[in-house]
Image: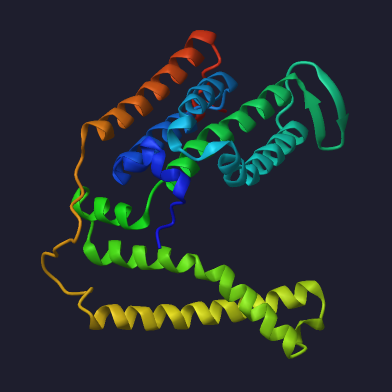
Length: 262
């Protein structure tokens, strides 16, 4: 069954080639990684938010998928606020902790930068079927078929991890093994899941080899992956977002090339 939900079928991005989505995410992400400033990140985040209706996810779908990354961004911002390099006026300090004008500005930049990088990457991934991505990587980017098919098989197994975890938890509780401490229980169950995953992966690799997935030579593909006008348009939009974000930061004087930091 496809990983895409029913509401995604109305999204324009669902019909876009997976390689184009990957290229668009890389363009925006790599550009934002070149500088730590709040202007470029804010502009990129704002322009990306304007395109979210094209995903077909809806407000609730976006919230369910993105709220964990909001927490990560907030934690990164708090850490930077407390332990960032102090500059300007210092408002409060204690031992290694110092809150100053510089740390506040850097914390805001870090939060916006994390969100601006994560949101388009996660959204584009969630609107991409793994099989479509594998077809694009093999047919358009000409990556080795063995590597692509192995990666596709691994992605298909990721969804089974949670089911295996719940099954292991129920089995261990039935045998009375799960009555130990929480950390000890987690460590034992994680090791059991690792062993189970290795065994399943070995069996899957053997089965795929037996069915000719590892055969050398030119492969044929059931579905053709082509680049259409909307795919080039998506890449152009991503490039426009990156250029606009950088131009705004340079114009505002906040552009801070990361390789130029002391």
